Length: 85
Image (cartoon, rainbow, N blue to C red; front, side):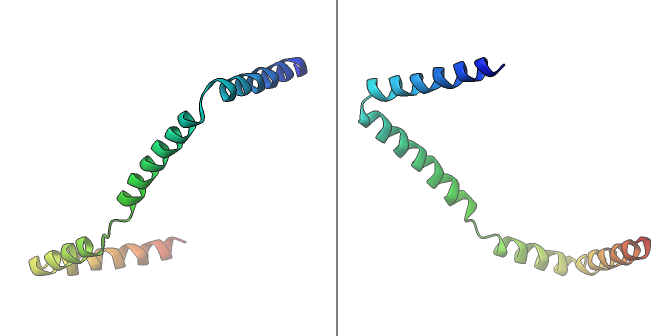
C-alpha cells in the first residue's frame, strides 16, 4: 500500500514537471486571466443589493393588508416553539 502512494506521488510530480517544461508561460498567464475573469463575474453577481426588493415586497404586502397576518403567524409560531422547548 505504501509503495502505491509513493508511485502515485512520483507519477504526478513528474507529470507536473513535464507540464511546466513543455508549456509556455503565456499558457499559464492566459489560464490565470481566464480564472480571474470568471471570479470577477461571480463576485459581481454576489454583490447585488436585495434591500429594495425586500422593501417593495413588504410594502406591497402591507398595502394588501396581508402583512399583519403574516407577522401574527410568525409570532404564534415562535411562541409555540418556545413552549415546546
